[in-house]
Length: 335
Image (cartoon, rainbow, N blue to C red; front, side):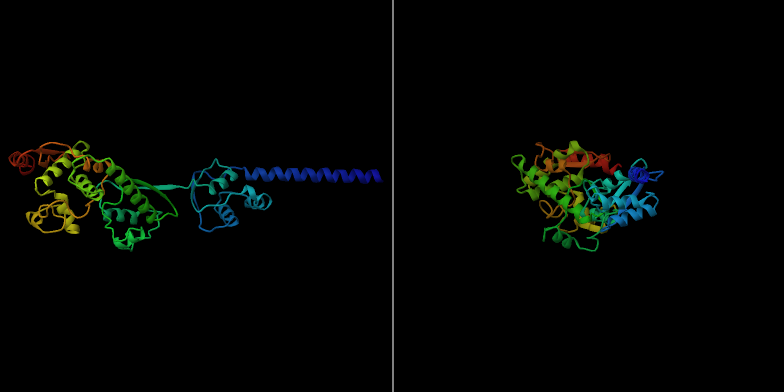
């Protein structure tokens, strides 16, 4: 009788142990099972979402089949569960459930990019930021002055102070984050360039270099011309000649500019019209790239005082007004 009882108990223990072991391995198999996806899927971890909420949502969307397996893991082995991070994540069919959970707790969020071209204005940059998808638009209803105050640059005119480049962002970031990055980069690069400036400059400060660089940026996109244009501007200023650069006229016209400049526009007295004012305009007129900044502080020596567009993105440079008028006849009036 005792022997039978012992045998029965032993059988129960063995069966129970086998069930426990079998249940454990089944549980682990569900955790390591591939996601129920046929194609990559973008999943967003909601802000402030708890683990159970996310797992239930994933099950409801058909990403995982057994939410209970992950909920059990959170209770039994909480140290194995990552702290979820708000953001968008790319889920792949070959991922296991555990790999997916590790991803949702990582910094490998889906990122987006926006490119601010060299020569753009701050107004154009703000329009691009306002249209950027997945980016929180905190400054959309702010004035330029309010934006600069938010960035810690109260009473600083924004034009020129943001470095044109490609910036990456992810869900949860705002336009303020991009503006801070761009501003910091311009300040750092301008400081570096100013420290490496050439001798015998007509400009006297880093800010004047920023203004000069913006004129160069708007005048040409040809890399080989930037230093020569800087040289022309330097010599004209040294000789008391006005810079007479069309981009300053356009900037002074603001939104009135429709693609054409008339003689009346050239004579209009605005703070930026270098056909009317002496020297440089009071502020930059665009966002210059590094090459234009470097050209502004390293003007090419020479004798040229004039240049005119050839119509192909490059310019014809001249030493005398007579040479310049001939070039204008050839490239502008005849065209």
